[in-house]
Length: 283
Image (cartoon, rainbow, N blue to C red; front, side, top):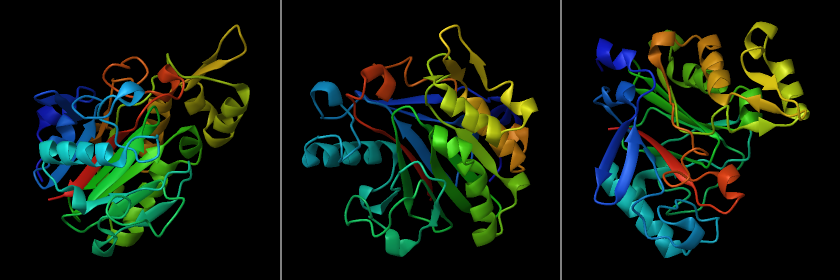
C-alpha cells in the first residue's frame, strides 16, 4: 500500500463525497491505501425524521428500526460495502479493545452482540467492516499496511485519559505483529477545543494522565472557572507516544459542534440527536 508524499502532507483536509443528498467524508491519507475501505458518515442523505434527520445510524436513539436499516443500506452502498459485513463496538467509554473475526460478522446489526464494554475493535480479516459511533467523541482509525491489519476506536474524554489510542496500537502489536512506525492513523470529526468546555474534575484527570509538557497545550482555564479542552491534540500526542510517526497521522479540522447541519453533535443539540458512524475495512 503506497502512500504518496502529497497525501502524507495533507494532514487535515478531508475529502467530501456526495451521491445525491447523501454526503460522507474520508481521509486522503487513508484513501491512498487501495486495500483499505473507510469513511465517516454525515447526517445527510437518510430517511430518519425530526431531530434525528436524516442519516441516523443508531438503534438506541428512539428511531424506527427500519429507518436505521435503510440508512445503513444507503451509506454502505455509497462507501462500497455490504451492511451484513458490519461489526459494531459496544461503547461505554472504556479503553477495552476486542479482536474480531469472521464469526463476529453482523454483530450489532444482523445478530446481537455477545460482548459488552468494547470501545475499540481490531482485525486482520478482509471483508469485515468495523463500525464505531459518534456525536462529538473522537474517531480513531489505525491501518497497518505491512501486516494488513486495522483498528477503529471511540475516544471520549474518558477514553482519551485512558489512552485508548495507545491501547489499540498495543493490541494490534500483540495480535498481528504490527509495528507503530509502519502504521497510518487518523483522528476523525469530533468536537473542537473552542466548543469543548469541561469542568475541573475532567482537567484533573488529564493532568494525571499527561506529562506537564504535553498538558500545557491541551487546555486553558477561563474566567468562569471552566476549561477548554483539545481532544484532537490529546489523541495526536497519544498516537505519537505509541510510536506512530508524525507524518503518518492525519488530524481532522471538522468540528461536530460547529457544523450541526452537517454532523450530529450531542452538545450542540443538547442530546437531541442521532449518531454518526466511522467505518474501516480491509478489502
